[in-house]
Length: 248
Length: 344
Image (cartoon, rainbow over all chains, first blue to last red; front, side, top):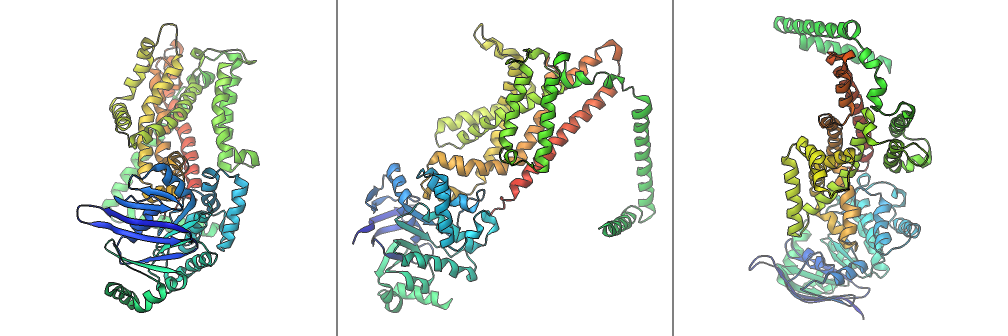
């Protein structure tokens, strides 16, 4: 198995004493899906944002797709990683002044220097995969939240990434719109995309994950197979968290 | 349609009755105001039609438009102004020709070299020195050149002010603060009187260009502040999204920040250019014969002495018309931009 993400003892402290990440170590192999769960403020967003250099860390080491990053955060290496890693945000973060297709083709044309026509063609293919090719020439504000998030996934896929990061992709959506986004992510998992997903959706996590990582106050509490984690979690803290989620 | 209009008109009058003539006190006040307004209006009307001597305007129309531009070459600035007007109309109506629709911005920017070529001459046209330029032509030239030059300069200043390098940040914020604390007329004096002193002997900059540079120096400080406002209102998540796509710093500025900041700052920017158009009249004090300067020189002619009111009423209406055209164009642009601007 070829590991795509290796994190060793990642530590990040905000102010003295308070740690956003506390000795976090993990491995994600190619084609696998890691789901990260935990209460808010547990550091799960911080963790996946370190993977593409949006967040720094103080100690430890990262190895993404064979590119090593330590706490000095070499700009060139992070840039290399970003070209091969896609990210989807909670708030979609589409560019409001660009049309849907322009949102998707911006990076392929200017980062990968592909021809506009080629990028357009691939962008349309991705949009049809997401079931929203009819919106290609609209602007983000004209789309619903679920549609915008699917555009954001297509935008992340446009660079043909080897790893996709999802930072609570459904937390800003209407309950009715969540499934259309989760289905799109499921489809990607079936196609063998390597993914790290931060989510609170239990049934989705059960379906899609190969491994569940549970965090609390910056520490990894447990890493288990989903079958074990959701039926018989090893730690008291994980069980308490799952009980809380079930009540909602 | 017409029925609805008549109905709403009736409602309108009923409301008017309710608000203006509801009791004795309101009725007297309303009548007093109506009498005052009608007296003022009728006096103005009588003056405009019977008392005013419009010969000072009608016999000098070419002067107002072109200044002392040689009579046989007046078609050149006229062509320029008419092409600007036509382009404005095309822009407002939604151009019918596909190529113009696509290249509207290019066409607008292209009017500057066209205007300079027509005014300066050369390449087949007889060359004409800038001291012959004047009137509305010069006013428009000053406005258009200064605002086009100060936009990129203002963008650079705004970006430098946001820079993480302390020296660059300090320099640009000092520049902006100094420019904003100096009156425009002082900057213009600087341009006309001091720039020639600083330049090495033998190099001379045309006084029209010195005025344009002075306006650019001044206006770009204000534009920088408008654009900084736009930059600051872009959420940081936009930058994160662009970073995660692998765009580098310059690409983020070029494709994500500047287009959005300009859209946000657009109303403020149009304000600046309308203000600039009116402020070009300050150059009349400094010896350029632009629209106001023409008015002053005509008033100095013994034939028209003392006809201040006619000349200034006429000039005010020309400024008003030009500013209205600019405002309508700006509103049109804002509406077109707002189609894709609803935020979050």
